[in-house]
Image 1 (cartoon, rainbow, N blue to C red):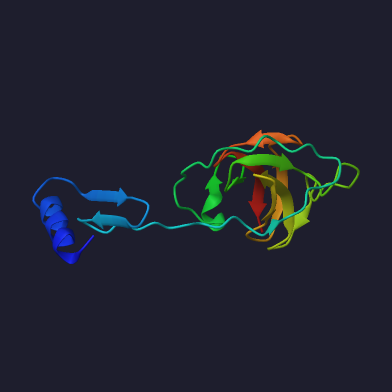
Image 2 (tube, rainbow, N blue to C red):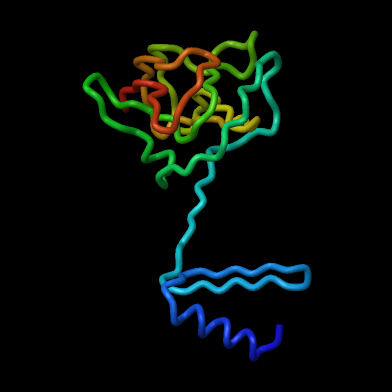
Length: 160
């Protein structure tokens, strides 16, 4: 496509209500967008591991889900009995690094900031969920190998 045709195409797009035009053929691809620039933000899950705990069955891979932008620090909400630590992602909750291993935490245990509390497996990636502050575990809200949704309560904690 020469510059004359390209200018004509841009003029046609700007004179209509079209905000995006895309043309693709074997030789070239043309994309014309107009209006306010859309900003995309990607939020990474906490420390992901490429291995699966031995003996765990993988959950079926979930389709990517658009979720509100939030950091792990903002995943803490207040409840009547304490604060809840909520899942920052959709996946499968694991309380231990393996089926025969001891759980990362138990009820009544005091944990330090950055200590691993559990794993949430998402799309075959093991995401360690860490404590955002020094706290006491008051309740573990999910059973081992249970599916969790974004924002589901994983633990009830008391900040220390």
